[in-house]
Structures are given as C-alpha cells and as structure tokens.
Image (cartoon, rainbow, N blue to C red; front, side, top):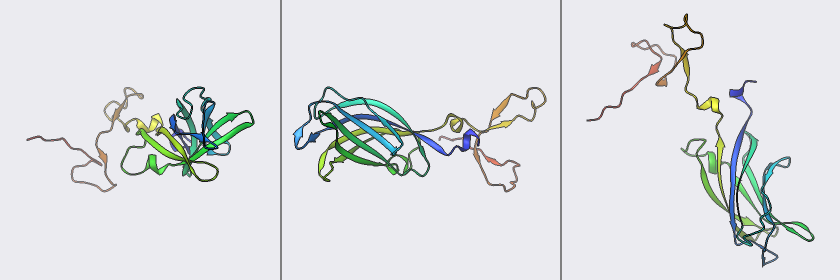
Length: 184
C-alpha cells in the first residue's frame, strides 16, 4: 500500500492541565498523570506531576496512531499512591470534536472535558489541545508534467492550479476551472 492511502492517521494531543481534582473527596497533593488511550494496546502517558496538587499542569504532547474507524479517545487521570495507582477521573474525547464541521483536518482545537470518577460523580476538568496530523504528501499541491519540457528534464514538474472539474469536455479545452479575483 502506498503512503497516500495508509489505513491510519496520527492524533497529536497535548495534555495541558486539570482542575479541581480529588481522591476520596480529598484534594490531591502530587503524583498525578494522564493516560490517553486509543484502544487497550495503543496509548500514551504524561509524566507524574509533583507540583500543582489538585490543579496540575503538564503541557506534554503525545502522538497516537489511530485507525479511521476510531471514534473516541479515552483520557484517564491517575494518581500514584502508597497503595498503587488510583483512577481519579475519566473523560471521553469524541473525535467528532476535532474532525467535524468545516474546520480543516489539521486545525488545532483547545478542549475541556468533565472528568467522572469510578462512581460516575463529577471530579474535575481536564484541558487538552488536539489535532489530526495531515501527512506531508497530502499537503503538497497536485503536479502535472509540463508538456513543453517533458523531453528536457524528467524531474521538472509544474504545480496544477485551479479546482479539478468533472470529466466533461468544455469549450475551453481544459479540465480545470481557473479564476482571478476582481476588485472594484
């Protein structure tokens, strides 16, 4: 399979901070970290924050490969305690919050989600920024061979301009619509 038609894409998510975290209704002092999960075997984690207490900040960027069928990313906030790691709260980040509407796929989104503890009760907020990284080859303009120079240099290509139009023949001989803005 070539690079243009790969079966996955990369989510770039920055775990910024969290607010009002508690464990057993007590403020958290330290050792809080976040796990971002695409699925049980594909995840990334921040380092444990030793400062910030119940309002920690990380500002750590994670890159996660995900398939085109992925619909949610799970964000788990955990705390290291003497009895082991405990889940402080969980939030689901729907990819439709990043990929929907009229924004370009690579647009950076700043998002905040309510965390819920294991009992389903509200337990703080997590703040993230996220975007889907667009492969470099999909960002480059389409190129066409220059018919005049095709015999001189096989490596020279000219970027195609305009918007491709269907396969219908036009009176103007092209298959590309071209326009020039006109100001009055």
